[in-house]
Image (tube, rainbow over all chains, first blue to last red; front, top):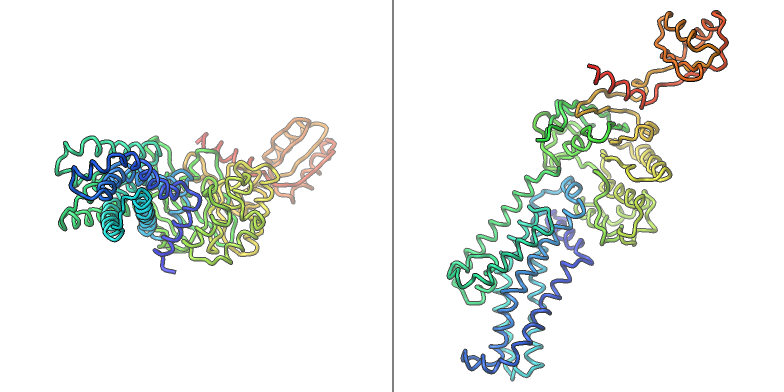
Amino acid sequence: MNTWIACVLSEHAKLRRTLARGLSVTAPLCALLLSLFVLGDVELLAVDRGVPPWRAYLDSLLRIWASVLLPIMATLQAVLLAQLEHGNRQWKYLLTLPVPRATLYLGKTLNLFVLVALAHALLLPMAMAACVVTGLAEGNIGGMTMFLVQQLAASCAAAWMLAAVQLLIAIMIESFVAAISIGLLATLVALLGASAMGSISGYYPWSMPLHALKHPGAAWWIGVLFATACIGWLGMVVLQRMQVR
Amino acid sequence: MIQTIGLTRTYTAGSGVWDIDLDVPAGSIYAFLGPNGAGKTTTIRLLLGLLRPERGQILIDGVPRSTDPCSAPHIGSMVEGPSLYPHLTGRENLRVSALLVGTSRAAVEDVLRTVGLIDAGNKLVKQYSLGMRQRLGLALALLGKPRLLILDEPSNGLDPAGMADMRSLMQRLVRQTGMTLFLSSHLLDDVEKVATHVGLLHHGRLLAQGELASLRKPRVRVECDDGARAAQLLAEAGHAVSLEAGNRLIVESPAAAAGRINHALVTAGIEVSALGIGQDSLEGFFAQMTGEKEAA
């Protein structure tokens, strides 16, 4: 079997019974529950923004998701993935196996990306079901689906950049609390300082999923893709140079 | 199988290992001995590529070792206790590693059977006893059928029965597979029972190494009615003698000299009640080596 496929499958096998995997289900569920609080104001919001009620509701849901729950979820998942090795003193075994360290890092990164994508994939039917059950869909299933798929795909792709940054931090910092704190603090900064940051917020990893919902141009996406690749490469270098004392 | 030349690695606190020249023959059980903090784990981490040496060279089976584990023959290892995922079962732990080592599921069952965990394979590791964890750690090290196994304090935390189990398991493995086993320990009595070769590490320096039998000095034990006079007599005859309590003497001499010692004592009118031959214990040898080093 190809080494990197083996690494991906091995990382996947480690995720059994982990909180990291459970978060891909609970995080979108939490976003959905929080979005129910705006249901009462949906009509007003729709009129205010000049959009159909389902769109006003989904905009609110996606904002809650991309600005709060997604960054927190990605932070937790990245740290939990890294802690599988830090916490169980696994590096001293893992790094002696006949596998290139860069491939090990790649396997971990891809699994984290899959977890983030899974959460988005689950949020799609949850959000649609919410619209249908509350009567907001009103026969616009096609348009609603298209809108949700586009927005969730954008949010997911931008979140991969955030996840890559978080994973790098979590691999470099052995302390669970410190790694989590950095992610949560960065999320808080994104929440409170987004308006103060202005256009720069689009380049702040913890604001990127929210920025991605605002239809940024191709240049921004190329930048995100490039930055994600660079962060991934940096992670491989970090693991390559890691010494286990 | 393992050769190091001038292997050196220091830490900022002043500890580390200096100029380690290991020579571990293929097919041997090499016990790497030393008190806690002597540098055993540091040396093992250097051998496994987990640490980079400041100076020196490591050759595994003649191949220079770098930090890239792909560049050298696969080494099975267990460093400072087993590295396990407690949320997975024993079998799942092995399958995770089997994917990386490139071995089949059948190989997983094989190693589970070898370490006697075939019936406990579906139990979560967090429910395992310490002894079972050690055995699973050994099973992980055995995946991929490595020709060299490096175990750091494999008996740590085990009760006497568990230690005996681990010893017989290690001996069986070497006998059946012909692999080389490099194990570190601070429990001299424990490794004395399994090792064919030893290396003694003290304050980061290798004091001695070689075949166990050649390192331990032969000695003759004597019990007589006048220990002090017997000790004086034998010392005058050129023997290295130590007088112990109860008129017991330890004479550093080969077994062949026992008859001459007995004759000399009896001729001098000393009644010999017991005479035995044996070898210096590893503990005695270690104490002697470290004592000489401290004195130097």
